[in-house]
Length: 180
Image 1 (cartoon, helix red, strand yellow):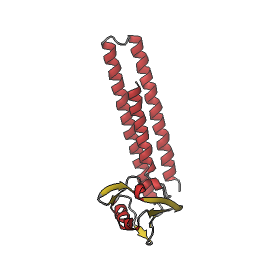
Image 2 (cartoon, helix red, strand yellow):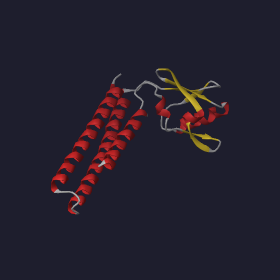
Image 3 (cartoon, helix red, strand yellow):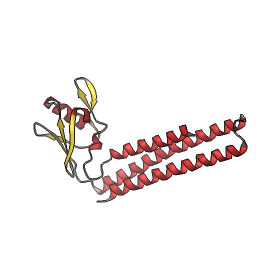
Image 4 (cartoon, one colour):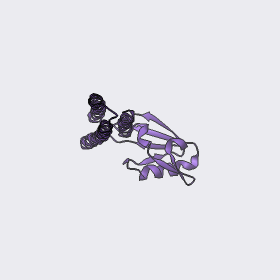
């Protein structure tokens, strides 16, 4: 049972990480988490080669540890799917995020809902696998019928708990994105 709950928890953790990269009208340094910079031939996380700060609500400032990395950081941001153009002042890379349009907010809300549904599918697949494992144990005589029924109840309770948590995360992020 613990293995299956662990799979369900990983779905929640993955969803939370995905939601951290979705910007909701203000600059969030986590939006840069998936960006890799070419650091002397090695793809490296942006946070490993620079300091990332948010000086204003819609601005991210990236200060590289080495001045020679400015062009590489700009290039990495340009080829990412963030849809923003970085600027530099010689020492820092500055990324300004435009105000989200109503249409873009609705697109983001749809994307959030889809990611939530994908996480629910993972949780339900874990439930199915747990039920199949319990059924096999019951047929093999390792679980009595009562223990099997209890196991099914426990599996369903765990599933309900994780689905409810996913719903809360989706609702919270959707509200954050749609609020002007």
